[in-house]
Structures are given as C-alpha cells and as structure tokens.
Amino acid sequence: MKKTFITVCALLFVGQISAQVNIQTDSLVMRKGKHAAFVLTIEDAQYKKTKTSWVKELTSRKKVKAAVNNTDVEVLDGKITDLINNELNIYSRVLDRGGKVIIESFYEIDNKFTPLADSLNNHTMMIRQFLMNYGAKAFNVAMDDQIEDTEDDLKGILKDIKKNQNRISKYESNIEKNLKKNKSMTEANLKTDSDIITNDESINNQRALIQTLSSGTDARKSAEKQLRKMEKSAKKLVRSKEKNLDRIADNEKDNVELKTNIERSKYAIETLEKEKVKREGDLAYLKKRKL
Image (spheres, rainbow, N blue to C red):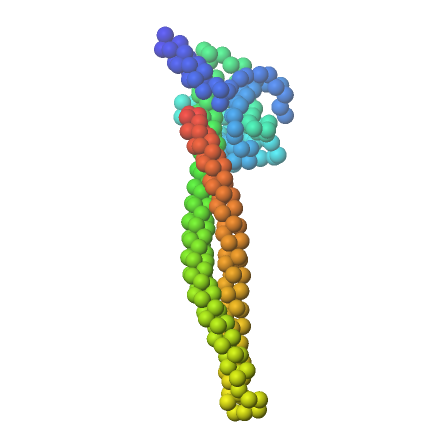
C-alpha cells in the first residue's frame, strides 16, 4: 500500500509540471545497444548552460569525472540519489531542439540496464524523481535568466523614459529662454526705433544748419563733421535693429525645432510606456511559470 501511495504522488508531481518539464520512456539505441531510455524534455532551457548543469548534477553526489563528447555525457560508478545504494553507470545525450533541451539517459545498475518505466519498480521511480527534480531546477534557472533579462529590459526602458522626460524639460527651458530673449530684443528694437526717429530729425536739422553756413568756414566744417558722426550713429542703430531681428528669427526657428523635438520625445515616451506595460506583463508571466 505504501509503495502504491508513493507511486501516485510521483505521478501527480510529474503531471503538475508536465507543461514545462516532461519525462517519457522509450527504447532507444546507444553505444551499448538498444535499451530503455528516460527522455527528459525541458522547455525554454539554454543548451550550453543546461549541458553544464547536467554534468554537474551527475558528478555532485560522488566525486567522479564525466566523459563528455559532443552531445554525449557519461558517468561511470556515479550516484544520483541516496535512496539507491548501488552505483550507477549513466549514459546520456543532451540535445538542442530549438527552444527546448532534451536529455536522453540510460541507467546501468549491476551490469543491467533499468527496464522501461514501471510504476512498481523502485529504481525506475527514483530515477524519474531524480530527473523531474533536476528538470524543475534547470527550468527555473532558465526562467531566472529570462526574468533577469526582462528586469534589465525594464530598467533600460525606465532609463530611456527618464532621458526623454529630461530632454522635454530641457527643450521647454530653452523655448522659455528664447521667448525671454526675443521679448527683450523686441523691446530694445522699440527703443531703437524711437532713437532712429530722433536721430533722423537731428540729422535733418543738422543738414539745414549746414546750408546756412558759408562754404569753407570753420563753422561749416565743424557742422559737417558733426553730421558725419550723427549719420554713423544712425547706421549703428539700424544695424543693431537688424541684428536683433535676425536673432529673433533664429530663436523663433529654434523654437519650432524644439517643439518638434518635444513631440518626438513625447511619442518616444508613449511608445516606451506601452513597451513597459508589455515587459511588466512578461515579467509577471515568467515569475508565474517558475516551478
């Protein structure tokens, strides 16, 4: 009765995680002939990492060396569980099947290979339990790797969102600075317009004065010199206004570009937020899949 209870529990455990880790038995050919094979399938596992961990699993309970040749992993006089007193010869193949890893293993005890799965065979049950425990562990390692990658992706997404938010703040600050500059230059130009009008009136008055003075006299020469200074000052005022107008136009053009950049950053944030939600969903799903 106790044996039957253990068997039922083992089968229930196998069924519980069969979607991620599955064990089947088959009669397969290996280098010592055709024998019963335990075929362990681990979904979403990385081949190289799983192969390395499989070798470690076979050699961790007893200090023996594994013979590894391409897909083949063999351990002589090994031990997989304390419940089996006999030493085992374990012959296995680790196969990459694109998105999952399959381990075909054969177990030789006292020069006899374990027969095909029989729920009433203690050795068979213990081997299946050993494989299921290892499969669950290997699958969880694969999930942990994917969880770590997804968490790194989320960190990158959050970092990019922050970058775009900072860019928007910088763009908005530059727009505000340009607006303040343009306001200041517009006010300066209004004063310049007033100065130009005043200066033009003074020039006209000076020209009228010169007409009243005799040619060649010191008074006329002095008045003409003063007129030249006034005309030079008038040109400076006009140039100052033109420069301000050019700067105002450049700032307005710059603001148009800055507003475009803001819209681009907002769109990037919107896209990143959607990706963030998706990756958060992926993360929750991966954590839920762990065994």
